Image (tube, rainbow over all chains, first blue to last red; front, top):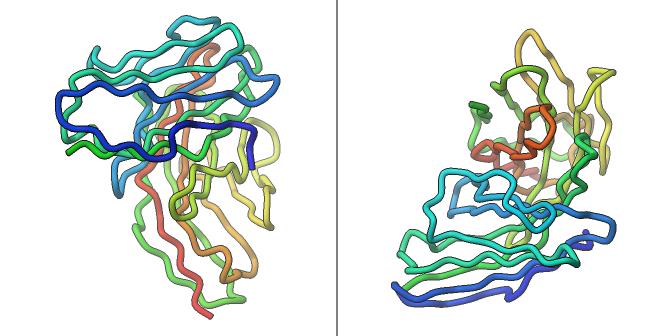
Length: 114
Length: 115
């Protein structure tokens, strides 16, 4: 098991609502990346946070936003939820500046939008 | 743009036989390549990575992968499969330029080891 934790484990929301997912990074890691894994697909990069700033973003609309805190933990916020947002959301922590470092993933949050 | 192809959605192997899970990639410049495994209702677990150096990389649980630059491939292998190896396997690529740590994943290969 990695030291990356995510909460909650499961979440059910209705269309139009807002959701916040949380991630605590592994000790010694300063970078958090978020991925969306739809059913039967590989994970898709949403964005990455380093030094409390967004450091790269994938092809996701602005209603997907995030934060990183001084302790390197992170939040993913999704506004105006759509049915297609139903997925497993994964966070991964790593060490920026150690470009060969590995991203270690948490167990994920399963979001269901009804 | 970077991309990964895993041409086989499903691979079935008899227990004790060697296994191969295929991966090809496309990226500008030299690649960093990774294999992850996912068990049901779990996150991704790191298996191994290629950064530079020896083309044969050894990882966790007896897995290894061979980097082939001319064929842009990074196939995952194991000499003798175990039933417990049954899971979903993902290949991923990352560009080597500093600050770009985005991983691009393939669509995954479901490996089933038959007792």
